[in-house]
Amino acid sequence: MSDSGSTKPVVVIRRLDGDAEARTCATLMSTSEPWVRFGRDFEKSYALIRDPSREVYVAVTGEAPSVVGFVVLVMQGAFVGYIQSLAVGDGWRGLGIGTALMEFVEQRVLREQPNVFICASSFNPGAQRLYERLGYRRVGELTDFMVAGHSEILYRKSVGPLSR
Image (tube, rainbow, N blue to C red; front, top):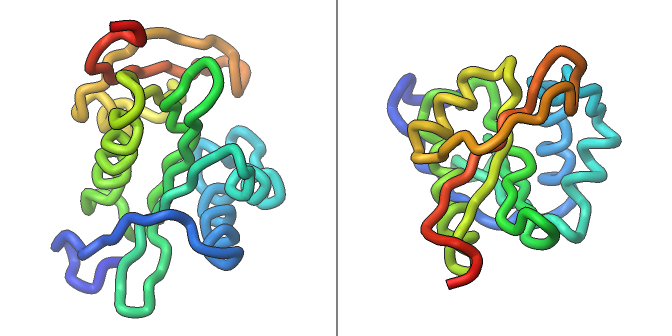
């Protein structure tokens, strides 16, 4: 939790550094929604975080840096620039860290590609509001994709088509 109440903390976003940070991210993922509902336990979360085909960035704060959030980015395949996972610790939500992670990754992607993609679960209206506030447009819906009875909403932020 932030030491200064609702004051925005000083956060640095950088590449994941080492196994301890990977374990912290996997713990955060495996104990948070929507991943709990998806059945993504620590081992599956850790495997995703350590997947060498993914780029993982962490939000750290404090003199002895502690991970307070992270983002997993896919820069290959059909949806280059796909934000696969984004999480912020419970005590750090509402302080702009999710927005900072999104903006950091957008800058990273848009240096190479004109589109950034992310999904939000239909049962996660907070994520949907964040993505829409940041200028993402809803471009599709995958019904019963991750969990029966719920959809994954595909969002896209674009500065142009793939072919110019």
